[in-house]
Amino acid sequence: MKLGFIGLGIMGRPMALNLRRAGHALWVHGRRPVTMEVLVEAGARACASAADVAANADIIFIMVSDTPDVEQVVSGEGGLMPRLRPGQVVVDMSTISPAVTRRLAQELLTRGVEMLDAPVSGGEAGAINATLSIMVGGKDKVFERVKPLFEVLGKNIVHVGDNGAGQVAKACNQIVVAVTIEAVAEALTFARRSGVDAARVRDALMGGFAGSRVMEVHGKRMLDNDFKPGFKVRLHQKDLRIVMENAHQLGLALPGAALVAQHLNALMGDDDGDLDSAAVVKVVQRMSGLDGK
Ligand code: NAP
Image (cartoon, rainbow, N blue to C red; front, side, top):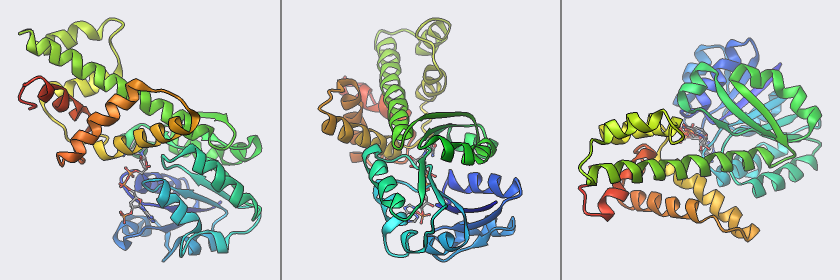
């Protein structure tokens, strides 16, 4: 199959490599040419713009940072739009706004091009090892066409619903992860202020209802004071911004998510955007006069 891949960062590069290694012809575009080198070594063709990818590939994957970036790749200067042809599919795997996703899907349809939103969870390790969870929005027949390619990239692949439904599922994922990080941060801080060994508290909690992947992974990072990412504060802040903007449009109160969004804002203001989002514990500690270390 003739595939395209745009956005070759932490996630995009290993995902594109997995598609190439599965034997597909691949055209790639990275904003910084250096990001294309490893793909070219693997046999992909480097393109100077997203438009050049559109001129060659039948199914085009996007994995860039934020909502305006996907809009830029689709319809900005050098973007896909003018070179698209009926029958192509655009698969956006970035985490962006569900509302903008629905609008982009409509715009693409005016050129006879279908779109899937397919955000992921599982991080860099999931991208490298092809074990991502993939949450897909779009039409059944388009999902079926792209599914074998999703199977090259991930393990838990769920067709959630129509366009935008994948992004809604990802927003739900980020609400649960964020509020759980906050809960783990508060619990371990409570243990510490009470003069009890927080590591043993975590051990005790892991076996019961309070146990979770977040308690395991983020709880460990908090105890070790090791905030090497992982998933960066700036990306989690972006994801909760998407959640809160869409909640605002829906007239929906999400007080837990709103609280964690404020704590992520505080970390950004303290120049901690590149730390793992387990660093929320630093904000919780500082509020009560602990050292925030
Ligand atoms: P990243 O390492 O920052 O990579 C983003 C890539 O997109 C960069 O190569 C960047 O180019 C490119 N890009 C951004 N804006 C662009 C634009 N307007 N035009 C062309 N290229 C553009 O981020 P990432 O970690 O791969 O994340 C990508 C997406 O996956 C995000 O939506 C993120 O929320 C989501 N995600 C990430 C993780 C994770 O653990 N990292 C997990 C799940 C989901 P430059 O190299 O020039 O900056």
